[in-house]
Length: 149
View (tube, one colour):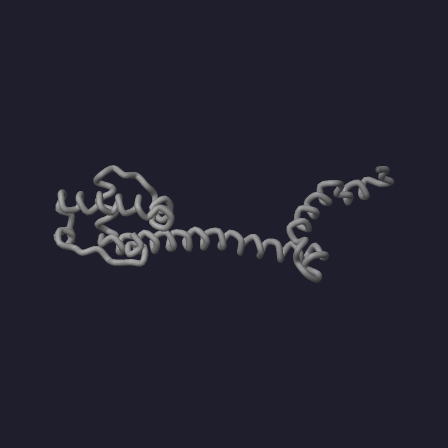
């Protein structure tokens, strides 16, 4: 590139500007209207979209945590154990399964979850965890899955 004056050289931004704009336009490629083609509008739209994406990632984590808790709670109720008692008993037994794994066991491996709940019941009675006195004489909840066996 040949510059006739020093001012023209200063005004030339070179390839950096091209790649900076290209990065924004690649993110804005699926937008509609001028938000896709006009840089000054596209950059605002891209920043807003990236903020929503960040918020969405946090909301997804919260939603999954709530889903796991609901599944674990349903599995505990099916086998007649309180959720707090279940967690406390497993921690006393040094069973280090996180919420995701426990939820997967509750949904896809009911026999394994039943074994964990029986273990939790025994430990709760043994260590006299609060609300464990009702586990001594508790009747299990009858569900469709238990009727098939």
